Image (cartoon, rainbow, N blue to C red; front, top):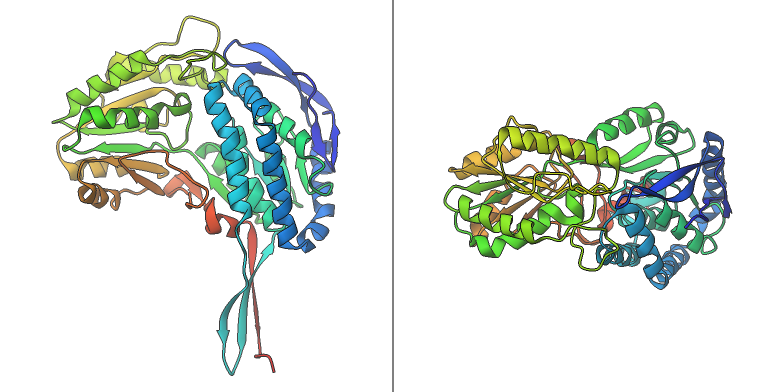
Length: 469
Protein backbone atom coordinates (compact mmCIF):
# COMPACT_ATOMS: atom_id res chain seq x y z
CA UNK A 1 0.00 0.00 0.00
CA UNK A 2 2.64 2.51 -1.04
CA UNK A 3 1.99 3.36 -4.68
CA UNK A 4 -0.25 6.43 -4.55
CA UNK A 5 -0.19 9.48 -6.77
CA UNK A 6 -2.04 12.70 -7.46
CA UNK A 7 -4.32 13.07 -10.48
CA UNK A 8 -3.55 16.27 -12.38
CA UNK A 9 -4.62 16.90 -15.96
CA UNK A 10 -5.40 13.25 -16.63
CA UNK A 11 -2.06 11.92 -15.33
CA UNK A 12 -1.08 10.21 -12.10
CA UNK A 13 1.90 12.17 -10.78
CA UNK A 14 3.93 12.03 -7.56
CA UNK A 15 3.64 14.82 -5.04
CA UNK A 16 6.44 17.31 -4.69
CA UNK A 17 6.74 15.94 -1.15
CA UNK A 18 5.44 12.89 0.74
CA UNK A 19 3.75 12.41 4.08
CA UNK A 20 2.94 9.32 6.17
CA UNK A 21 -0.59 8.01 6.62
CA UNK A 22 -1.20 6.05 9.82
CA UNK A 23 -3.48 3.12 10.58
CA UNK A 24 -5.50 4.47 13.55
CA UNK A 25 -5.94 0.96 14.95
CA UNK A 26 -2.19 0.41 15.30
CA UNK A 27 -0.61 3.89 15.02
CA UNK A 28 1.77 2.36 12.49
CA UNK A 29 2.61 3.92 9.13
CA UNK A 30 0.28 2.48 6.54
CA UNK A 31 1.73 4.18 3.47
CA UNK A 32 3.66 7.16 2.26
CA UNK A 33 1.26 9.50 0.53
CA UNK A 34 2.04 12.21 -2.02
CA UNK A 35 1.82 15.75 -0.70
CA UNK A 36 1.04 18.39 -3.29
CA UNK A 37 2.79 21.73 -3.44
CA UNK A 38 1.17 25.07 -4.10
CA UNK A 39 2.49 24.78 -7.67
CA UNK A 40 0.74 21.43 -8.07
CA UNK A 41 -2.51 22.88 -6.77
CA UNK A 42 -2.16 25.69 -9.31
CA UNK A 43 -1.51 23.11 -12.04
CA UNK A 44 -4.63 21.17 -11.07
CA UNK A 45 -6.76 24.32 -11.11
CA UNK A 46 -5.28 25.34 -14.48
CA UNK A 47 -6.07 21.91 -15.90
CA UNK A 48 -9.64 22.11 -14.64
CA UNK A 49 -10.03 25.61 -16.04
CA UNK A 50 -8.72 24.55 -19.44
CA UNK A 51 -11.04 21.52 -19.52
CA UNK A 52 -14.12 23.49 -18.51
CA UNK A 53 -15.32 24.92 -21.86
CA UNK A 54 -15.42 21.55 -23.62
CA UNK A 55 -16.92 19.76 -20.61
CA UNK A 56 -19.61 22.42 -20.17
CA UNK A 57 -20.47 22.05 -23.86
CA UNK A 58 -20.70 18.26 -23.58
CA UNK A 59 -24.36 17.16 -23.73
CA UNK A 60 -25.77 16.32 -20.31
CA UNK A 61 -26.67 12.84 -21.53
CA UNK A 62 -22.98 12.17 -22.18
CA UNK A 63 -21.92 13.63 -18.84
CA UNK A 64 -24.54 11.41 -17.16
CA UNK A 65 -23.18 8.36 -18.96
CA UNK A 66 -19.65 9.02 -17.74
CA UNK A 67 -20.69 9.61 -14.12
CA UNK A 68 -22.56 6.29 -14.24
CA UNK A 69 -19.44 4.65 -15.67
CA UNK A 70 -17.58 5.83 -12.58
CA UNK A 71 -20.24 4.13 -10.45
CA UNK A 72 -19.54 0.91 -12.37
CA UNK A 73 -15.85 1.25 -11.54
CA UNK A 74 -16.60 1.85 -7.85
CA UNK A 75 -18.76 -1.26 -7.64
CA UNK A 76 -16.25 -3.40 -9.52
CA UNK A 77 -13.50 -2.38 -7.07
CA UNK A 78 -15.58 -2.11 -3.91
CA UNK A 79 -13.62 -4.76 -2.02
CA UNK A 80 -10.27 -3.11 -2.57
CA UNK A 81 -11.56 0.37 -1.78
CA UNK A 82 -13.26 -0.86 1.40
CA UNK A 83 -10.07 -2.50 2.68
CA UNK A 84 -8.06 0.67 2.07
CA UNK A 85 -10.76 2.73 3.75
CA UNK A 86 -10.79 0.54 6.87
CA UNK A 87 -7.00 0.65 7.07
CA UNK A 88 -6.76 4.44 6.98
CA UNK A 89 -10.07 5.48 8.59
CA UNK A 90 -10.53 2.73 11.19
CA UNK A 91 -14.19 1.84 10.66
CA UNK A 92 -15.20 -1.84 10.55
CA UNK A 93 -14.85 -3.48 7.16
CA UNK A 94 -18.61 -4.03 6.84
CA UNK A 95 -19.21 -0.32 7.40
CA UNK A 96 -16.46 0.56 4.94
CA UNK A 97 -18.05 -1.71 2.33
CA UNK A 98 -21.37 -0.01 2.95
CA UNK A 99 -19.73 3.37 2.47
CA UNK A 100 -18.22 2.35 -0.86
CA UNK A 101 -21.50 0.91 -2.15
CA UNK A 102 -23.31 3.98 -0.83
CA UNK A 103 -20.87 6.09 -2.82
CA UNK A 104 -21.85 4.24 -6.01
CA UNK A 105 -25.54 4.65 -5.20
CA UNK A 106 -25.13 8.41 -4.78
CA UNK A 107 -23.28 8.59 -8.11
CA UNK A 108 -26.12 6.75 -9.85
CA UNK A 109 -28.99 8.71 -8.36
CA UNK A 110 -27.46 12.18 -8.58
CA UNK A 111 -26.40 11.57 -12.17
CA UNK A 112 -30.03 10.79 -13.06
CA UNK A 113 -31.25 14.29 -12.23
CA UNK A 114 -32.14 16.94 -14.81
CA UNK A 115 -31.61 20.68 -15.15
CA UNK A 116 -34.51 21.60 -17.40
CA UNK A 117 -35.10 25.06 -18.78
CA UNK A 118 -38.17 26.56 -17.12
CA UNK A 119 -40.49 29.05 -18.78
CA UNK A 120 -41.43 31.68 -16.21
CA UNK A 121 -43.63 33.69 -18.57
CA UNK A 122 -44.75 33.33 -22.18
CA UNK A 123 -47.22 36.12 -22.93
CA UNK A 124 -47.93 38.61 -25.64
CA UNK A 125 -45.39 40.99 -24.17
CA UNK A 126 -42.43 38.78 -23.30
CA UNK A 127 -40.97 35.34 -22.93
CA UNK A 128 -38.88 34.68 -19.84
CA UNK A 129 -36.80 31.51 -19.55
CA UNK A 130 -34.70 30.26 -16.63
CA UNK A 131 -31.56 28.26 -17.34
CA UNK A 132 -29.06 26.58 -15.04
CA UNK A 133 -25.50 27.13 -16.27
CA UNK A 134 -22.30 25.58 -14.89
CA UNK A 135 -20.08 27.75 -12.72
CA UNK A 136 -16.60 26.68 -13.79
CA UNK A 137 -13.94 25.12 -11.56
CA UNK A 138 -15.27 23.73 -8.26
CA UNK A 139 -13.06 22.97 -5.28
CA UNK A 140 -14.27 20.08 -3.11
CA UNK A 141 -12.76 19.73 0.37
CA UNK A 142 -13.50 16.38 2.02
CA UNK A 143 -13.27 15.39 5.73
CA UNK A 144 -11.83 12.24 7.28
CA UNK A 145 -14.93 10.61 8.78
CA UNK A 146 -16.56 9.46 5.50
CA UNK A 147 -13.95 10.27 2.84
CA UNK A 148 -15.57 8.37 -0.03
CA UNK A 149 -19.25 8.87 0.79
CA UNK A 150 -18.90 12.61 1.30
CA UNK A 151 -16.98 12.85 -1.97
CA UNK A 152 -20.07 11.36 -3.61
CA UNK A 153 -22.21 14.13 -2.12
CA UNK A 154 -20.32 16.63 -4.29
CA UNK A 155 -18.59 15.10 -7.30
CA UNK A 156 -21.52 13.64 -9.30
CA UNK A 157 -23.66 16.78 -9.04
CA UNK A 158 -20.77 19.09 -9.86
CA UNK A 159 -19.83 17.09 -12.95
CA UNK A 160 -23.39 16.56 -14.15
CA UNK A 161 -23.99 20.31 -13.96
CA UNK A 162 -21.03 20.83 -16.30
CA UNK A 163 -18.34 21.96 -13.86
CA UNK A 164 -14.78 20.68 -13.56
CA UNK A 165 -13.27 19.79 -10.21
CA UNK A 166 -10.26 19.89 -7.95
CA UNK A 167 -10.73 17.53 -4.99
CA UNK A 168 -8.74 17.67 -1.75
CA UNK A 169 -9.24 14.78 0.72
CA UNK A 170 -8.28 15.09 4.38
CA UNK A 171 -4.56 14.51 5.02
CA UNK A 172 -5.24 11.60 7.38
CA UNK A 173 -7.53 9.72 4.93
CA UNK A 174 -6.27 10.32 1.37
CA UNK A 175 -5.50 6.78 0.23
CA UNK A 176 -8.88 5.35 -0.82
CA UNK A 177 -9.60 8.65 -2.58
CA UNK A 178 -6.33 8.54 -4.52
CA UNK A 179 -6.95 4.91 -5.44
CA UNK A 180 -10.41 5.90 -6.69
CA UNK A 181 -8.77 8.66 -8.74
CA UNK A 182 -6.43 6.15 -10.34
CA UNK A 183 -9.27 3.77 -11.14
CA UNK A 184 -11.36 6.41 -12.95
CA UNK A 185 -8.62 8.57 -14.48
CA UNK A 186 -9.42 7.43 -18.02
CA UNK A 187 -13.21 7.70 -17.71
CA UNK A 188 -13.34 11.47 -18.11
CA UNK A 189 -11.54 13.85 -20.47
CA UNK A 190 -8.23 15.00 -19.02
CA UNK A 191 -8.43 17.90 -16.62
CA UNK A 192 -12.12 17.51 -15.83
CA UNK A 193 -11.39 15.86 -12.48
CA UNK A 194 -8.21 16.43 -10.46
CA UNK A 195 -7.11 15.18 -7.03
CA UNK A 196 -4.47 16.80 -4.86
CA UNK A 197 -3.48 16.22 -1.22
CA UNK A 198 -1.98 18.39 1.47
CA UNK A 199 -0.95 18.51 5.12
CA UNK A 200 -3.71 20.99 5.97
CA UNK A 201 -1.79 23.75 4.20
CA UNK A 202 -3.56 24.09 0.82
CA UNK A 203 -7.17 24.60 1.90
CA UNK A 204 -6.68 28.33 2.27
CA UNK A 205 -4.99 28.47 -1.12
CA UNK A 206 -8.01 26.75 -2.67
CA UNK A 207 -10.59 28.97 -1.01
CA UNK A 208 -8.91 32.17 -2.19
CA UNK A 209 -7.81 30.90 -5.62
CA UNK A 210 -9.07 33.32 -8.29
CA UNK A 211 -9.84 30.56 -10.80
CA UNK A 212 -11.99 28.44 -8.45
CA UNK A 213 -15.60 29.59 -8.74
CA UNK A 214 -17.16 27.52 -5.94
CA UNK A 215 -16.04 25.73 -2.80
CA UNK A 216 -18.02 22.79 -1.46
CA UNK A 217 -16.71 22.08 2.03
CA UNK A 218 -17.63 19.55 4.70
CA UNK A 219 -15.97 19.91 8.10
CA UNK A 220 -16.05 21.77 11.38
CA UNK A 221 -17.88 25.03 11.91
CA UNK A 222 -14.64 26.74 12.96
CA UNK A 223 -12.98 25.80 9.67
CA UNK A 224 -16.17 26.67 7.81
CA UNK A 225 -15.90 30.23 9.12
CA UNK A 226 -12.37 30.42 7.71
CA UNK A 227 -13.54 29.03 4.37
CA UNK A 228 -16.32 31.59 4.19
CA UNK A 229 -14.00 34.48 5.04
CA UNK A 230 -11.39 33.40 2.53
CA UNK A 231 -13.92 32.75 -0.25
CA UNK A 232 -15.30 36.25 0.28
CA UNK A 233 -12.14 37.68 -1.32
CA UNK A 234 -13.38 36.51 -4.71
CA UNK A 235 -17.09 36.21 -3.85
CA UNK A 236 -17.04 32.48 -4.53
CA UNK A 237 -20.18 30.45 -4.26
CA UNK A 238 -19.97 28.22 -1.20
CA UNK A 239 -21.73 25.22 0.21
CA UNK A 240 -20.78 24.54 3.82
CA UNK A 241 -21.86 21.38 5.65
CA UNK A 242 -20.56 21.93 9.15
CA UNK A 243 -20.71 20.64 12.69
CA UNK A 244 -23.66 19.85 14.90
CA UNK A 245 -24.50 19.38 18.55
CA UNK A 246 -27.44 17.27 17.52
CA UNK A 247 -30.15 16.71 20.11
CA UNK A 248 -32.45 13.76 20.57
CA UNK A 249 -35.64 14.18 22.61
CA UNK A 250 -37.21 11.09 24.15
CA UNK A 251 -40.85 11.61 25.15
CA UNK A 252 -42.52 9.99 28.13
CA UNK A 253 -44.46 7.39 26.13
CA UNK A 254 -41.60 5.35 24.68
CA UNK A 255 -40.74 1.75 25.35
CA UNK A 256 -37.06 2.08 26.35
CA UNK A 257 -36.23 -1.44 25.20
CA UNK A 258 -37.56 -0.68 21.73
CA UNK A 259 -35.92 2.70 21.19
CA UNK A 260 -32.54 2.05 22.83
CA UNK A 261 -30.93 0.19 19.90
CA UNK A 262 -31.86 2.94 17.41
CA UNK A 263 -30.67 5.65 19.76
CA UNK A 264 -27.38 3.86 20.37
CA UNK A 265 -26.78 3.45 16.64
CA UNK A 266 -27.70 7.08 16.04
CA UNK A 267 -25.15 8.22 18.61
CA UNK A 268 -22.29 5.74 18.18
CA UNK A 269 -22.18 4.95 14.47
CA UNK A 270 -18.62 5.38 13.15
CA UNK A 271 -17.55 5.71 16.81
CA UNK A 272 -19.61 8.89 17.07
CA UNK A 273 -17.65 10.57 14.29
CA UNK A 274 -20.72 11.71 12.39
CA UNK A 275 -21.72 15.36 12.05
CA UNK A 276 -25.38 14.34 12.38
CA UNK A 277 -24.98 11.83 15.21
CA UNK A 278 -26.97 12.24 18.41
CA UNK A 279 -24.68 14.33 20.62
CA UNK A 280 -27.13 15.13 23.46
CA UNK A 281 -30.11 13.05 24.56
CA UNK A 282 -32.95 14.69 26.50
CA UNK A 283 -34.96 11.97 28.26
CA UNK A 284 -38.22 12.40 30.17
CA UNK A 285 -37.82 11.67 33.86
CA UNK A 286 -40.42 8.87 33.77
CA UNK A 287 -38.31 6.72 31.44
CA UNK A 288 -34.86 8.13 32.26
CA UNK A 289 -33.51 5.37 34.50
CA UNK A 290 -34.77 2.53 32.33
CA UNK A 291 -33.40 4.03 29.11
CA UNK A 292 -30.05 4.69 30.79
CA UNK A 293 -29.88 1.04 31.82
CA UNK A 294 -30.75 -0.18 28.32
CA UNK A 295 -28.08 2.01 26.70
CA UNK A 296 -25.51 0.92 29.28
CA UNK A 297 -26.21 -2.73 28.48
CA UNK A 298 -25.70 -2.11 24.76
CA UNK A 299 -22.52 -0.11 25.33
CA UNK A 300 -20.99 -2.81 27.53
CA UNK A 301 -21.75 -5.53 24.97
CA UNK A 302 -20.36 -3.60 21.99
CA UNK A 303 -17.15 -5.00 20.49
CA UNK A 304 -14.51 -2.30 20.04
CA UNK A 305 -11.48 -3.41 18.04
CA UNK A 306 -9.50 -3.07 14.84
CA UNK A 307 -11.99 -2.58 12.01
CA UNK A 308 -10.23 -5.28 9.99
CA UNK A 309 -11.23 -7.94 12.56
CA UNK A 310 -14.46 -9.83 12.10
CA UNK A 311 -17.08 -9.02 14.71
CA UNK A 312 -15.88 -5.48 15.40
CA UNK A 313 -18.76 -3.06 15.89
CA UNK A 314 -16.80 0.14 16.62
CA UNK A 315 -13.29 0.95 15.48
CA UNK A 316 -10.83 3.54 16.77
CA UNK A 317 -11.12 7.27 16.42
CA UNK A 318 -9.56 8.30 13.15
CA UNK A 319 -6.63 10.43 14.29
CA UNK A 320 -4.60 11.37 17.35
CA UNK A 321 -5.87 14.95 17.46
CA UNK A 322 -9.49 13.81 17.73
CA UNK A 323 -8.51 11.09 20.20
CA UNK A 324 -6.91 13.63 22.52
CA UNK A 325 -9.90 15.95 22.13
CA UNK A 326 -12.39 13.23 23.09
CA UNK A 327 -10.32 12.42 26.17
CA UNK A 328 -11.00 15.97 27.41
CA UNK A 329 -14.72 15.24 27.10
CA UNK A 330 -14.23 12.13 29.24
CA UNK A 331 -12.56 14.26 31.90
CA UNK A 332 -15.51 16.64 31.80
CA UNK A 333 -17.96 13.73 32.04
CA UNK A 334 -16.29 12.43 35.20
CA UNK A 335 -16.29 15.92 36.70
CA UNK A 336 -19.82 17.04 35.82
CA UNK A 337 -21.80 13.84 35.41
CA UNK A 338 -21.93 10.17 36.33
CA UNK A 339 -20.19 7.78 33.94
CA UNK A 340 -22.21 4.56 33.88
CA UNK A 341 -20.53 2.79 30.96
CA UNK A 342 -17.06 3.17 29.48
CA UNK A 343 -15.36 6.40 30.38
CA UNK A 344 -11.77 5.66 29.40
CA UNK A 345 -9.32 5.36 26.58
CA UNK A 346 -8.45 1.72 26.02
CA UNK A 347 -5.03 0.51 27.17
CA UNK A 348 -3.71 -0.65 23.82
CA UNK A 349 -2.12 0.75 20.67
CA UNK A 350 -4.48 2.76 18.50
CA UNK A 351 -6.93 5.57 19.16
CA UNK A 352 -9.57 3.52 20.97
CA UNK A 353 -12.17 4.97 23.33
CA UNK A 354 -14.70 2.85 25.19
CA UNK A 355 -18.34 3.57 24.24
CA UNK A 356 -19.34 5.84 27.07
CA UNK A 357 -22.75 6.66 28.59
CA UNK A 358 -22.97 9.63 30.96
CA UNK A 359 -26.02 10.42 33.09
CA UNK A 360 -26.95 13.13 35.60
CA UNK A 361 -25.26 15.89 33.62
CA UNK A 362 -26.54 19.31 32.61
CA UNK A 363 -25.91 22.25 30.32
CA UNK A 364 -22.86 24.25 31.33
CA UNK A 365 -20.66 21.17 30.99
CA UNK A 366 -18.33 20.79 28.01
CA UNK A 367 -19.88 17.45 27.04
CA UNK A 368 -23.38 18.93 26.69
CA UNK A 369 -22.49 22.34 25.29
CA UNK A 370 -19.92 21.34 22.66
CA UNK A 371 -19.69 18.80 19.86
CA UNK A 372 -17.73 15.77 21.09
CA UNK A 373 -17.48 13.89 17.75
CA UNK A 374 -16.68 10.68 19.54
CA UNK A 375 -18.27 7.69 21.33
CA UNK A 376 -19.55 9.59 24.37
CA UNK A 377 -23.27 10.23 24.92
CA UNK A 378 -24.69 12.45 27.69
CA UNK A 379 -28.26 11.79 28.91
CA UNK A 380 -30.03 14.84 30.32
CA UNK A 381 -33.20 14.48 32.39
CA UNK A 382 -36.20 16.74 31.80
CA UNK A 383 -39.75 16.93 33.11
CA UNK A 384 -41.46 19.45 30.79
CA UNK A 385 -41.62 18.88 27.02
CA UNK A 386 -41.46 22.57 26.16
CA UNK A 387 -38.41 22.95 28.36
CA UNK A 388 -36.71 20.10 26.50
CA UNK A 389 -37.44 21.80 23.18
CA UNK A 390 -36.04 25.09 24.47
CA UNK A 391 -32.88 23.41 25.73
CA UNK A 392 -32.40 21.44 22.53
CA UNK A 393 -32.59 24.68 20.54
CA UNK A 394 -30.24 26.60 22.85
CA UNK A 395 -27.18 26.11 20.65
CA UNK A 396 -25.49 27.81 17.73
CA UNK A 397 -25.78 24.54 15.80
CA UNK A 398 -28.76 23.24 13.84
CA UNK A 399 -27.77 20.25 11.74
CA UNK A 400 -29.80 17.24 12.84
CA UNK A 401 -32.20 16.20 15.59
CA UNK A 402 -34.61 13.40 16.43
CA UNK A 403 -37.76 12.84 18.44
CA UNK A 404 -38.65 9.46 19.94
CA UNK A 405 -42.25 8.64 20.84
CA UNK A 406 -44.94 5.97 20.47
CA UNK A 407 -47.30 8.72 19.29
CA UNK A 408 -46.26 9.94 15.84
CA UNK A 409 -48.53 13.00 16.02
CA UNK A 410 -46.96 14.13 19.30
CA UNK A 411 -43.50 13.54 17.91
CA UNK A 412 -44.30 15.52 14.77
CA UNK A 413 -45.50 18.48 16.84
CA UNK A 414 -42.18 18.50 18.67
CA UNK A 415 -40.19 18.04 15.46
CA UNK A 416 -41.69 21.16 13.88
CA UNK A 417 -40.40 23.24 16.81
CA UNK A 418 -36.78 22.13 16.56
CA UNK A 419 -34.34 24.51 14.86
CA UNK A 420 -32.60 21.95 12.70
CA UNK A 421 -32.09 21.28 9.02
CA UNK A 422 -33.20 17.66 9.44
CA UNK A 423 -35.41 16.17 12.16
CA UNK A 424 -36.10 12.44 12.30
CA UNK A 425 -38.92 10.69 14.13
CA UNK A 426 -38.13 7.37 15.84
CA UNK A 427 -34.88 7.06 13.88
CA UNK A 428 -31.66 8.94 13.26
CA UNK A 429 -29.10 9.19 10.43
CA UNK A 430 -31.60 8.08 7.77
CA UNK A 431 -30.17 9.80 4.69
CA UNK A 432 -30.67 9.22 0.96
CA UNK A 433 -29.58 11.02 -2.22
CA UNK A 434 -33.12 12.10 -3.11
CA UNK A 435 -33.66 13.83 0.26
CA UNK A 436 -32.24 17.37 0.50
CA UNK A 437 -29.73 17.88 3.31
CA UNK A 438 -28.44 21.08 4.90
CA UNK A 439 -27.92 22.77 8.23
CA UNK A 440 -29.54 25.63 10.10
CA UNK A 441 -27.74 28.36 12.05
CA UNK A 442 -23.97 27.76 12.23
CA UNK A 443 -24.27 24.18 10.96
CA UNK A 444 -23.94 25.27 7.38
CA UNK A 445 -24.97 27.20 4.33
CA UNK A 446 -26.63 25.68 1.28
CA UNK A 447 -28.06 22.28 0.45
CA UNK A 448 -26.68 18.96 -0.74
CA UNK A 449 -28.43 16.03 -2.46
CA UNK A 450 -31.50 15.98 -4.70
CA UNK A 451 -32.47 18.68 -7.19
CA UNK A 452 -31.76 21.40 -4.63
CA UNK A 453 -28.18 20.20 -4.23
CA UNK A 454 -27.63 19.95 -7.97
CA UNK A 455 -28.83 23.53 -8.43
CA UNK A 456 -26.14 24.72 -6.00
CA UNK A 457 -23.51 23.83 -8.60
CA UNK A 458 -25.08 26.15 -11.17
CA UNK A 459 -25.64 29.81 -11.96
CA UNK A 460 -29.25 30.79 -12.58
CA UNK A 461 -29.51 32.66 -15.87
CA UNK A 462 -32.68 34.45 -16.95
CA UNK A 463 -33.27 35.20 -20.61
CA UNK A 464 -35.95 37.85 -20.97
CA UNK A 465 -37.05 38.80 -24.47
CA UNK A 466 -40.01 39.18 -26.77
CA UNK A 467 -42.10 36.11 -27.56
CA UNK A 468 -41.10 34.15 -30.60
CA UNK A 469 -42.75 35.26 -33.80
